[in-house]
Length: 195
Image (cartoon, rainbow, N blue to C red):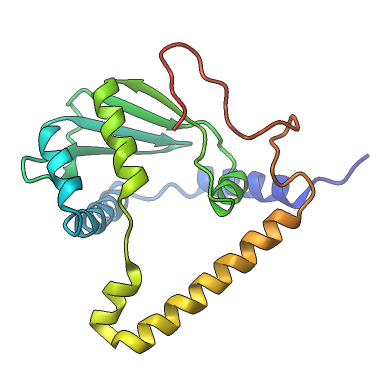
């Protein structure tokens, strides 16, 4: 009998811990609020992103992965807010790969994870534009706190660490293939688009 792979063990452990440790509602809401603040900080540095969100004011995007979900509402200011539970989602995005290990590998390869998309096509196009064009310049934000030279040094260490992890992932057997040996891009069906 073959021994389970470390990735399989990690996925099972993550699933068990996730089922056993359900955070209280107030904690989930507070984490989501902090995430919205961070996203809005990044959006405020991108006028084109804000202009695109202004055109989508009042529209709600719901994102799902495993037991986690988040509802984001586009505001008239071109920013984001948490969406009300009673408002119907205009767009639903679901990460179809439930394995955190596999998602981490996909991200380290610089690829997008497989996403099932349902809802408004125009809103989906705007979300895709935001994902493709909006980047957080963490080094710039850090330089405001600790200065340019230390921030650049921290950024360089982060880039080197990320490169080392990418190289490690790339050297693993089957690193560029899914479970069936094919590319990790999911098949799409009519009415769906990969993300």
